[in-house]
Image (cartoon, rainbow, N blue to C red):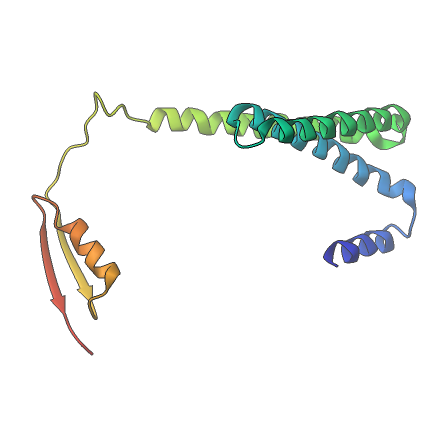
Length: 157
C-alpha cells in the first residue's frame, strides 16, 4: 500500500513522463546490483544453512541486474544516465572510505587481553531501589564482586 502510494506520488510529481523517471530507475538497478553482490560475498563468507542456494540466487540476481544496468548505461548515457554512473560509484567509494576509517579506529582502540590486562579498581556502588525484584538482584550480584562495596537501602513507598 505504501509502495503504491509512493509510486503514485512520483508519477504525479513527474507528470507521468517516464523519461524523467528513468534516472530513478537507474539508481534502483545499480543499487540492487551492489546489494546482490554484497549478499553473494556474505554467503561466501558466512556459509550458513543452505548458503550455496542462497548465494546462487543472489549471484543470478546480481548478474541480471548488472546486465540491465549495463544496457541502461549504454542506451541512456547521453540522456542523463552518466550522472547516475558517476555519482553512485562516488557514493560507494565514500562509504567504503568511511568503513575503512571505522576499522582503523576500532584497531586503535582494540586491546590485547594477553598483554594488556585491565586494572582492577575498588568500586563503591550505591543502589537506590523502591523494591526488590530480579533486575535489582542481578545488579547487586554484579556490584558484590570481590573488593567492591555495596550499600543497599530499600525504601517502600
